Amino acid sequence: MTKTDEELLASKEEGYETEILERYKELVVKIARSYYIVGGDIEDTVQEGMMGLYKAIRNYSPEKNSSFKTFAIMCIKHQIQTAIKKANTKKNAPLSSSVSLQSFADGDSAEEYLPMGLILQDSPVDKVINKENYHNLILNIKQILSKREYKVLTYYLQGYSYKEIAEILNLTNKSIDNSLTRIKNKLKDLNIA
Image (cartoon, rainbow, N blue to C red; front, side):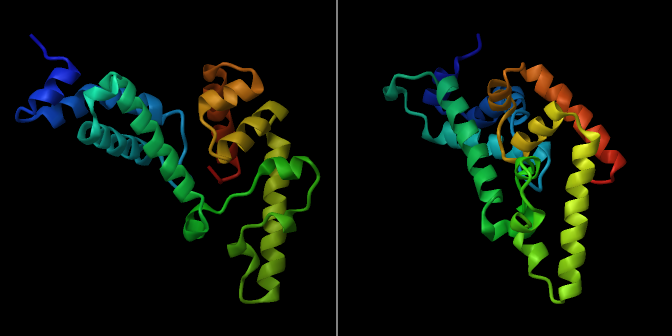
């Protein structure tokens, strides 16, 4: 008979950590698909989720009156969200410089939102070229995406999960997933996805 997660954790028998990691891998992948780490891919997000799961295994306490699964989900999400926040810090600016595309939809100028790496080039000519290229890129994106796709992309780039975007835009998670697939395909035509 298979032991419950709680029984396995309490027994600390040989290989218990590996068994729990295997039991929850699919759940980690499912959760990870709802998030995006700037400069990373799904494997990076899954890896962060697995680290969160490992922390849950190490820190679970049955005295807290919650199931291991509930605790694990919380730890997985927290680890991924922390990684997203870290990826968006100035410390990682070369990897994670991002700008809200919504700002351009509202008519703001590109100069106000360019990542510092694009503004602080060595020559004034580089500055002008980069500003113009960035502004043109935003205009191209706005032209090829529908209004809904543009909104989805904006929230997605800001680190919102599929679920959060779906709630904000009053859509289903599947609609968000489909929109992001279409967006990726359209952006491939611009050689930016």
